[in-house]
Image (cartoon, rainbow, N blue to C red):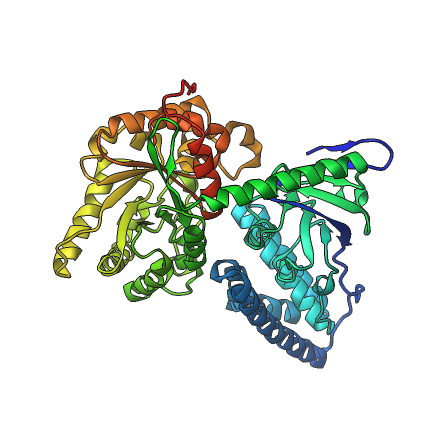
Length: 553
């Protein structure tokens, strides 16, 4: 991204919109400075044993601190955010990592600090050489563990981010998970990061906290200084350093407009969304757990259009039983009782793989065994979910969605298993079954798919990825990942037209975009599922539009 100077003092920075919102505060430049380098020194036999004992104490110390951080984050932000630290703890408990440190100590006979740096540096390189963004984030976890261990060896147990003053705009080259645990709404009003993207740990926690964040700003630490006044617009991906009076007034005007707009749309969020020509449109929410469901209901969602189950399965260290999954669904859906909820079957493969499944690597995982393909290969995993959903269906208006459908056979096999399990459990009234339309093949096969299901859900993110041949996480082809491209809108229109009287819902980032809503309504879509916080905005946008408009696709 670019850095643009305006005048002698004021600087406008352009980056990536990571977490939305506007904020004003004073900059605090965070430099991660570890203890001074201890230097490498050789060890005798007795000293090797002493260093091994030091390493074991440090590992125990870090495990305890990770447990504390996990509880702290879970209490503030929920289980999903805390899973970052659970993953680090699991990594530290991996015997191969601990053994590699001990083996290196024995072989190299040098001090523990240098051994840990060496071992973890090699681990980071292994992940980064794979060229996958998800694995690169795992490299951040490894860096974080390395730093924790080094600090423990040095007897340092504090973080400079713990006591930031109110109204701080945090400036950093990179934020690791152990840094972000100290972020607080009461002190940190915004974050600017030189090395960060929308999918990173810092982005996740900033969004969960509701803290505006802009990433991908080159030479950030050389541009901003502690004490500088900073204006941040996380929605636009901009920041103004040392603003003049005109910039300050522009910021205040924008903030006031946003505040009034939010208050207005929130007052009407419970009302149904009806277009100017009298067509009622359903606006539901995408959720991952109870906190999301609670927010969805507070924001006026008409139901749960997409319940993503991946966080639950990825966070577990063992194969969850159908009882555990059913309990999770019952607890999560309680605030939405009486509303219908579409639960997507586990959509794993590609970049999402539970550690307990030991899935084999694939040369091209995004075009490999994903979604329903993988579930059919692991029938125990599929049937455990189906049994849980059947149990929950006795108390909730639950529906099941089959992910990553390509052919009619995919759907038929799942439906047959579902019917057999329902018969075995003595359940006569089956939950409604739907299919995710995320591939061009599925979009072009609606006439046959609709005969097997009760409804269809269009996943615009993956549909765009596969139609435009552009990885959604690949920054090298960002200009090709256009979810509002005419090709995508025509596929959506085709799905609606071919579906006949089978209901169709649009999920994905596209469904929450106000600038595209007129064209989406023109395709015939009458049901959307969006992030819970966007429900009031989407309803407000729909009320100002007509389905009879001549919006060009």
